[in-house]
Image (cartoon, rainbow, N blue to C red; front, side):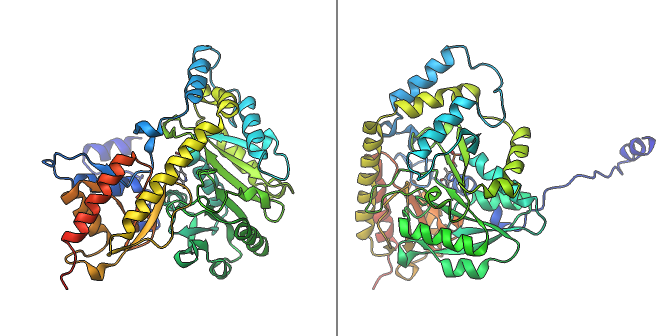
Length: 427
Ligand SMILES: *Cc1c(COP(=O)(O)O)cnc(C)c1O
């Protein structure tokens, strides 16, 4: 005791805590960090509005306003006065778990039980939960897609879970390089992550491809973590198939939320669901670990949980079809306009989610070093924010969201075209 105080007085105090050393600095890059950097590069004197192509949150645009039934469900639940307490369990209140189990079971060849469903603070916390659980085993690694969603890397590096990347193949509509997955895996591999519909690629995996994913996972003895936060947001030729359909081939953990389908990311309600009819996740102890983690983690707000049954039951097809129609429209507009810009290639037309990946042909541009340089200069000269590919693991590509107000999209694409023409290499 005395010693500590002495050291303090003489300025010799040694503090024992230090930063959490992340595995590598690049893996700690988050989309939010890159966006903040681009926003810092905007010119203050440009009178034009900023076009936010980097941000997958259309909730502030009038066309993307959530369903009235969803808002009513929240208001009525709140005003009932019955949901002001702490939630009775840390896994989610039973009516909400039951409603999600029933809703997801509609698309599966078997029935989920409410006990298969764990409520989380958005899909974000579902990612945190599973990454932390997997990291509990020393030396464990997880296979992540490249390009991907960088929050997985950030979480893994804080939890000291090792990551290995498999490729998504642009020439094959962004399918998983399954041969690459087999080469990457070893006896310490616990899981592979797929994101379907895809962020950042806007692809939707076919039934056949998902079956092959399940068979590969079975061969390797690993689970599939299926991030289906964009579930049902599919508007191309490939219908959305939930990975859980193949849960009897390999165990599946399905992650989801209301954030994207209902366009309410601020409501912070998501789930982690074991779609595993053979009960392998339970036998392996993974379910027990998930419960332990959730027992000490914070819960989604009780009144949001309370509104879930009504939200899921009352949301009708006309809301969903309107949003899907709007996404299809903006995706097509975005794709068609990129087709007219020679220095940018769009390898495949987006069929789902809210994003498309496009490739920069730097040899056609003058004075642009790479994707980050492109994004920084575009922000400064045109007040348009696009995400450089490095933020999602793919250098010299860009991730563009088409989930914005159609008029802004047209304006933004005009500005990108003007920027590219101004910087085109003279023949
Ligand atoms: C948006 C997103 C999440 C996070 O979802 P929230 O429910 O807002 O926490 C997770 N995964 C992917 C791929 C996303 O795009």
